[in-house]
Length: 220
Image 1 (cartoon, rainbow, N blue to C red):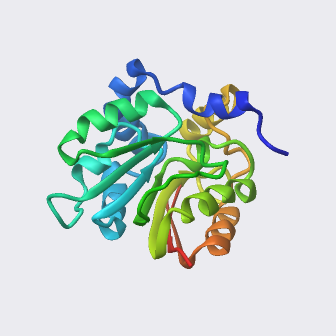
Image 2: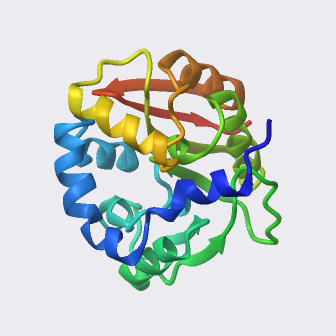
């Protein structure tokens, strides 16, 4: 079943200028350690291992990881993609020194852009905000893969509901956020993540840190 426009909107409506002002300290700081048990520095290491100088980042948050990761050059080609204009505004301002390209798009729909393809795509903390189960969320890999060169690195992280150990705080936050539609990960489990990554990418890799599934692979 296709998600409704309301379900899609709920997944990103939480991220307003006010909440984004607290995002780095609250979500990437306290919640990452106390609830998800996956510190931001571990995700930053994942960026450093896979990001290229020709990079598209999807679900950009505040741009915290992009500000700190190692592109391998002082002048990377960087593109930002999100359905939330507040996130694009905050990240683009933070990363202005790179003159980033900026695209507003829904990854569950085909993305028609007349641009040069990318060599890496970051999907960090994106999938758990997309409506549907992980198999349905696989459309995001297909649509984003169409924007890449063959062999491009696709990587990211997502919060998992099943197949991982969640402490009380993680369970409660996920319960509340799924109820509000901020998260849509009640059906997301480790086996499902492994399956969708393997279906869409070569050299699929999935690692669990806390209740976070950290994944990577390469486009075909």
